[in-house]
Every structure is written in structure tokens, then in C-alpha cells.
Amino acid sequence: MIKLAPFIKQQFDKLASASVVNMGNIIVFTSVAGWLASSAAQIIGIANNKNYTNSEKKFMISQEAADACVNIGAYFLITKSLTALSSKLVSTAKLAPKEVISFMRRTNNIDQRGDWRFDVSKAKGFTGEVENCYNNFKCFTDSVAAITGGIISSNIVTPILRNKIASRRHNKYVEEVSRPKLTADNTPRVVNTQRHTFEDYRTRVVGMKI
Image (cartoon, rainbow, N blue to C red; front, side, top):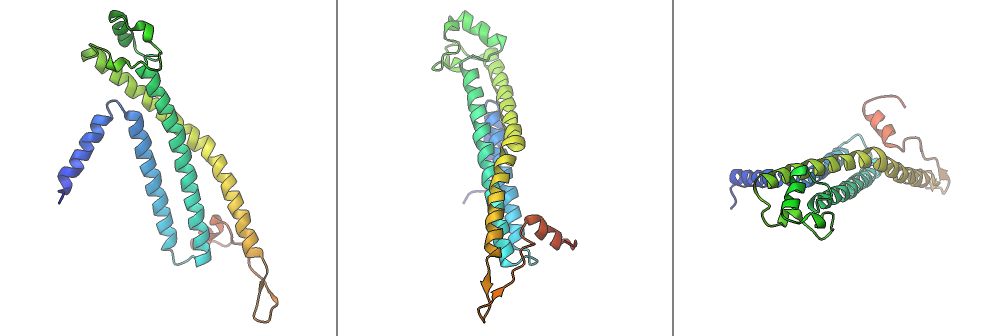
């Protein structure tokens, strides 16, 4: 049986070690974990709320799940692409601090700068101060790429995608609940279609008049 405290410490140690050269990935994956936790909490809260009918829960849970997929998918795709590009530019020394450029000149590797197949960190003699400088620079550029990707996805891409998907689901839901339903004597039964958005449900829970 795994002892919990040593296991957690070991995972944090691995995370700390990885952050030295893979800070971009750390930002991406911890942010995704945050998105997942937030969405799961929202869904659980809706499912356990007795103020909602089953129909309302079904609509809001599916809406929340769709939003989560869009948010997480767009965020991961954009930020991971930018951090991967950033890492490649740094590893090939296309983006590099002056200490790394000086090292490449000393070791006659300067002609390979920017070659997609070249990795300066694997060059002979790449140790000590040069390696530390490289790691710090890579950590910085990956962090900038991850943050930039997060801003683009969260503030530009996901709102557009989320609104389009929410609009389609909204119209589908309205169409469904507005479809005439028959009573026992086969006469159309009037269906209230006013409360069909999450905002309507939310305001009802807090006691506001719609």
C-alpha cells in the first residue's frame, strides 16, 4: 500500500524538477486541471440542487459539459501549440540568449542555429553556466507562450465557440419544449417556454422575479 504523504511529496518533487525546463507544460496542465475541477464542481452542484427539475438539470448539465469541452479543448490546443513552438525555437537556438550563442560559436555549431533537427542542449560541452542560462531562458519563453495562449483562447477563441454552441443548444431546447404536447383528451397542452436559459434557472433559485 502506498503511503500517502511520501507519495505526494514525491509528486511535488517531480513537479518542481520539471518546472525548471518545462514551465510551459506545468502551466498548461495545471490550468487544465483547474478547468476540469471547476466544471466538475458546477455539474455536481447542478445535479444535487433540488430547486431544479429533471428537465432543467438535463439542459444545464449538458450545457456545462459542452462549455467545459470547448474551454478545455481550445485552451489546451492553443497553449500546447504555442509552448511546443516556443520550445522548438529555443532548442534549435533560433531564440537564444547571448551566452548560448557564444557557446555555439566556440564549439563551431553556429551554422546549425535554427536547424529544425538541431538541439543545442545535446551539444557536447553544454553544461554549467551555459546550461543554467539555457534552462532559465527556456522556462521564461515557455511561460510567456503558455500565458499568451491562455489569453488568446480564454478571451477570444472560447467565447466565440462557446456562444455558437450555446446558441444552437438553446434554440434546440426551445424548439423541443415548445413542441405541442397532447393531454389525455388529445388536445394541445400549453408548455411554458420562458424559463429555458441558465440565467432563468439561476434567478429562480436565488428568489428573483423573472
